[in-house]
Image 1: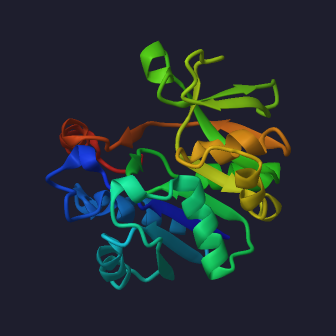
Image 2 (image 1 turned 45 degrees about the vertical axis):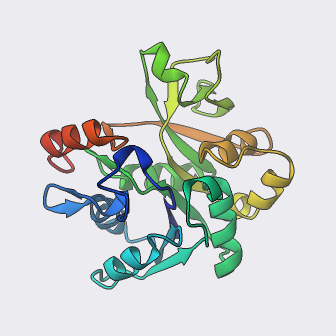
Length: 244
């Protein structure tokens, strides 16, 4: 299994901290955000390569970080250098797959969140289902729903519909940016783009995929801390104490 880490954003809401430094390498406690994620995932012993998808501006920072790790980590530079020219998350996944010739099951995650539970639970859930999979959590705040990927599921956790940032969310189930693609579904990313799926939000591919393939949704067993702006970063640093 490969783990693709989406880290090509420019984090403009965190300026000046991220004006010349990538958000995933900001410290939270005694580790960087990316360390928390990779070190946890590695305990499942199923990922044989981590692929950090960066923009050109920050690639050297990730390359330096990769040298400090024992895991096999490949940094892919998508060639963009500004927020205005970014490829978008789905095209970044396509870029990495094609550049490295990847053909495997894939865990695709945002590199700017920390979790108080182990992602190994999601990995095992996905492998047990033997389909592509997402996580879901209940969001009571209707205003926050407007900014999320929202899923509808049946009684067996099967995704029956998913929308990104819909003005009329169908449910209160939100999808955080952590996805599992089977090998077969990972091969369909280009097809999804060609068929018109969105390319900016990472969940847009899954929203399309769920219309042509089975996708299951595990209820998130803990809390996600999203580092979105300076205020949320300070809050995360004060509240986050690692994986329970």
